[in-house]
Length: 379
Ligand code: SF4
Ligand code: SF4
Image 1 (tube, rainbow, N blue to C red):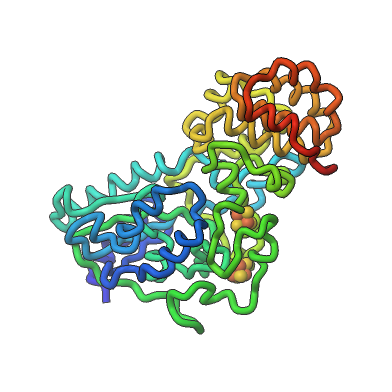
Image 2: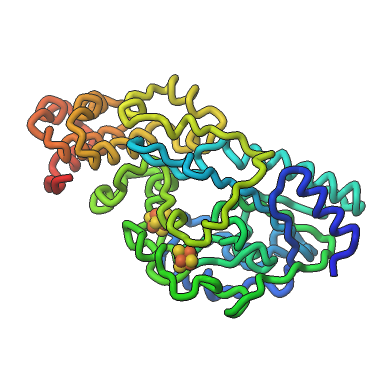
C-alpha cells in the first residue's frame, strides 16, 4: 500500500493540474521484443532516433542511472465536440491548445520541486519528460494502471477514454507501484479491454494499424502531416481528406470515449480558434500571419511550408473549384515543397490547363516531377 507521504505527493501533483497520477516500478524493464519487431518492420518510418534510443526506451535505468520508480502523469485534453468545426479542415484535437510540451513542462518543474521538498531528492535524483524523451510513457502508464493499451496503440483510460497527454518523472526514489487495471485479460496486453471490437483498425483511412496495437507510421496521416518534413507520397494524399494537421480517427471511434468527461485544464490553454480557420485562410498565410497565428502552439514546429503543404493536399481533396486561385498563387511560393503540392492539388481540381506558365518557369526537379506525374484521379 502506498505510504501516506506517497498519497500526499499524489494529491499535491493533482493540485498542480495533473488529472491522473500513478506510480510504477522500473524493474523489470519493458520486454524488448515488441519494440524491436516494430523497428525491424520499419514501422517507425524515418524517425531514426527511435532506433538509436531503443535500449533506453526499454529500460529507463539507462536514462537515469539508479532510477527505481516512474511517476506517470496524465493530462486530460478532451474537448467534447469542440475539436471539430463542421465544414472546416480538421486538426488533431491536441493541436487546439498552446503547445503542451511548454505548458506541462512548467508543471513538471514544480513536480520536481515537490520531490526535493517532500523527499529530500537532489536535482540529479529525478528526470522528467513530456512526450519527447526516450521513455515508453504509454507502456509505463499501462503498467501503472492508468489504463490499457488499445488496439489503436493509444493508452485508454477506463474513465477518460484516449484523450490523455502523458508525462513522466523518472526517479531514484522508491514508490509503491499502483496496480494495473483489473479486468479480464492479461494485464499489460494490447487490447486488454477491447474485447472483439476492431473499430479503430477498421476506421483507419490508410490501413496504418496492420495488427492490434501496431502502428505503421509510414501509412499514418499523423506521421505524414506532422513528422514527415518532405513530400507526402502521392498515393496517400487522397486518403488524407480534409485533415491539415494530424488525424484523430482511430481515437474518435473508440467506444471507451463515452466515459470521457474532460479534465480540469489547469495546465492547458485552449486555442480552439485554430479549428475555425478555413482552407482559404490557411492557403493565404504569410510568414508574418503564420507566426502570429500559431505562436506558442505545436503547429509552429511544422513551419509555414509544412502547413501549406498539408493545406494544398486538403484543398486538392476538397472538390472546391474556388480554391484553384489560391493554389495557383502558391505556384510561385519560395518553397519547392509547397509548389509541388500546389501543382498536385490544382491538377486534382481540374486546373491542369492553367499550369503552362508556371511549369515553364519551374526549375526544381521535385516540382517538375509533380507536373509530369500521372494525373491524379477525380476527387
Ligand atoms: Fe490511421 Fe489516422 Fe489512427 Fe494514423 S491516426 S492510425 S491514419 S486513424
Ligand atoms: Fe479497442 Fe475498439 Fe477502442 Fe480500438 S476502438 S482501441 S479496438 S475498444
